[in-house]
Image (cartoon, rainbow, N blue to C red):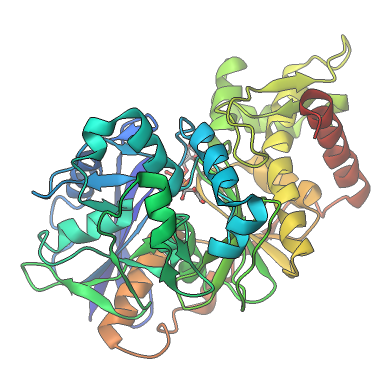
Length: 466
Ligand SMILES: Nc1ncnc2c1ncn2[C@@H]1O[C@H](COP(=O)(O)OP(=O)(O)O)[C@@H](O)[C@H]1O
Ligand SMILES: O=C(CO)[C@@H](O)[C@H](O)COP(=O)(O)O
């Protein structure tokens, strides 16, 4: 049997799956945690990869691919050393740089036209501007700029040859256009004052090279693109991922450009496109709410499922770490609609689940406005394990929700890409269709869903005027 491996180096951990290259059957898996924080030295990701693969997990693997958290700035000097810890997608310090860059290029529509997205603090381009302005001593040492998956791929290749990337991850930089397939070096220079080396963008099926022990390494991609590939997402499938970030996205046949900035016009990992909306606050909202209520995640589920839809008017705007969509980098959370009668642990737990999902319901509506069809939602990510989330999601999202099993779709997509590069075929290999999954939840109460989304929008407008 030919074995391939996929790596998911996401915000909170590294996960590895080893699969049968023919069928995609998962043969083994392992994971290791990452440090907390919005800036992390890339060596911590490498250590987690080593820890997760200890004990011979990768023995006999013929090809490997890396899916990783998008957008992070990995700045490397002439000797190949990392200049400073990577600034991650959820680091909001470059919010002012983002505003300045949007203005400099001529406004949001000019950005949507140039690179398919309007940059907020998450985008790599804004982190480059921040570095140039705030840490010129670091900026002047930078010779190569990479994304987390580019750096990990380069490490796997023994740092030999020039770094490479793929369309999917490149589309999250803010200086590569999915529509033209080219870097915008003028935008890099506008942000950074000069043009550091950027990774070559490989087509989806092309291998990046081989490790020193002869394992083929595929191009890799961003974690959301890898998830779409692992799920084999088709027309009518909208993916909602509840990890550290909340994302809602779909594979699309043509590039999109949303000048409102709500939808990012990314590329996918198959040669198509991946319009996506991302929130900063997803699974960790549930952990924080459980802590406030003196319980654990299972306890939060029990409480939330004991409250009625709408939590008797209690609304949580869960912007605990600032927010990206809507673009409120300095926001904090808000609990609205408190009354003596509704101030119960059950309602607070339900408000946390509903509030987290409402941001993604807004994202789904924005995708639909751009012509994305939502026949069903595929729910993945750590918080898709929550009983309360599974029950409540169809009501809040207003569509049938399916939870596919098993769950590590980013790693699975990276493994499927590795099998694709190994086969050298025009299309990715056909992998087991039994990943259809099961439909979950209350069978979406349309009236309750509208009421919950309406109360959330009213609280947001009252607090932020939009
Ligand atoms: N049963 C559960 N209920 C709610 N949240 C959960 C559950 N299991 C895991 N999580 C949360 O999922 C998150 C990890 O999800 P994951 O998709 O791996 O994140 P990331 O890809 O961003 O590293 C953690 O915050 C964890 O607390
Ligand atoms: O910034 C985005 C998408 O644009 C995030 O989705 C990151 O890619 C991090 O993903 P997770 O660690 O939450 O899976």
